[in-house]
Image (tube, rainbow, N blue to C red):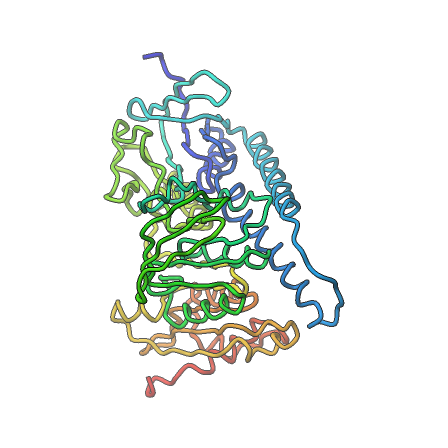
Length: 466
């Protein structure tokens, strides 16, 4: 074997946690390199979070334009130019790539574009995208390889060459009838966006409800909102077979409680979960163990089974959000400096960027019940917040969970305008250990969506009534 280049630290994959770690290490005076197969900065700025929210906002503008007369504005017929939608998204991505390259240059971290595979412990062979190979040996190694869309094992589905979120976010045409397999976050966000662009859309979800991790009342409200947008929805629906070619004509044989039926459409979007990018990169040679789903096994400090090897983000089984990958970076950064941060008891918030969005932090009612945690529940319609009267955005509701035997806030969920921003206020209170009465009695700005938190927390049942 050729003598490898000695690097103090290398990161395989340039996602959120990995790139920040590389920049930090390089600024600290260490020789650090990132090996990235394709997406500079990882999937978030290129093909996932930011591009999807970019196009979702274009869809929001189209919806507002169609409803302009509600606000006293007169417009003509509204059509969507998907080539311009795509170009707006591409311009944003190009700017983000430029920003990332500037950060690499400023920090001194080396970005190596190529595909890496371990050939010995902490030793990586990189097939460079521009040709040739490099052999790297690191004192410390960090794995940040992410996940990819999973294609279910349905006869004919792979042969139909379905869209995933990657291809759906790069279309310059409008599908006449988009069939979405999966009622999770990605599927629901893109289904609504394409419906507002002008496609006919059908969602096929194998589980009993949309947004399967959420409480039944949340799922019911999401289904109602999407139904009002004109989206056809099938739940408890198993796809038996797919025929045809996505982008031309497809036919799906689907089994529901009412029997078998055939759905015909122009395109299929698969949004049925993710799989870790851990196969075929020599992790077994590196001594890195995987779990039964293919994710890298880590402890609460994100250390793998191999000495001086860590894993970051989705490939380590962390919740699949960019903000969690960034926190993984902070855990590793601080521990390398002698700290003792862990992934235990992290309060992880998240949003689904449908319109209106869903935001949640802490326990849901179902989770509290499964864990045997008694709670008091307060709930109110978003339309009760006076801000909604000014913006004509009254769909959804707010819900808070408070401990039955204390004043501690245990969870919050909201479907409604600015839900993510409102949730952040509750999350801050939870992190500070503030009793729910602090929220209830706070002076909150009028008229804002967050003002509704005072009313919501005033509805928490008393302990004797719980």
